[in-house]
Image (cartoon, rainbow, N blue to C red):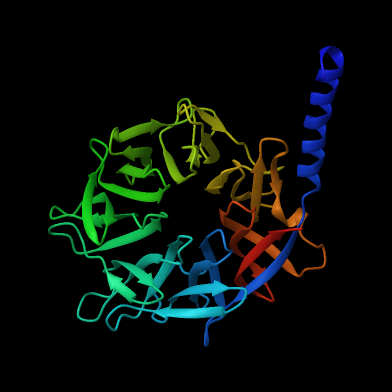
Length: 360
């Protein structure tokens, strides 16, 4: 057994070694590509096998892929072995997007359908054997969306209700459940779910100005719990939760107006993750079970860049961790799996394309 000063020195060496290892981490980059006829794409989520889901689109005036209502935007499933698969739409729809996938290869998202207004979308579940299934809406609702699915097949999302407001929703065996909303909110979305059926998301109180919202956590035992904001803040959002119940998202505070990426630990204490060097804002979209966090923020030139945050090394620009001659500018990182693989999108050959980063 190592004891006394020797043990302290040994532990200190382990901490330094872990820090150096984290700082030295680099990635290979794989282009996901686009569906036929498109020139833009974005990777929105991935599972432990490195399968990526997202959407493929044509360039729009928004400057970001999959943010408009252009007919032809389609959900995709990508894998290294099979390449890019078009998941199509539901019942003759014109637009779809895939936002979540579990390790069984079940995919969720939303799509419009024939016979309904093109701006009304409906949550779907896609499976390799059953294709795309319409999950429907809460009573009286005209639209819904599914965002994530856990290992047991429980799905988190949202749905309009009869009074025109939006509530958080979940689906188990294709049966919808109303998760409700925080008091006085008008729009609530359940954005992620872990394998303990803990759900996180956002309740919007006002579109402003100023915009006001709070992050929430939902579980069968707690129901919906307000996660609050950074000190003095008016807005927050929880975008992802890992199996330990650690959550990430963004919040403003009394010290700054722009969003900063934040993390809530298992005790629900919020921590500001800061910004990239020279930047003024940041947003965290994904976290894995090693508490590695990904998202995006601006740099000194105001350009958006994807980031990776770890407890050992803090927030780093992912562009500094890929080959310098890759031809890519990584703009946003949406998700990270347990192996440390990351998906998102970046500029490549003049267009925004989805990517998969794999640790070397």
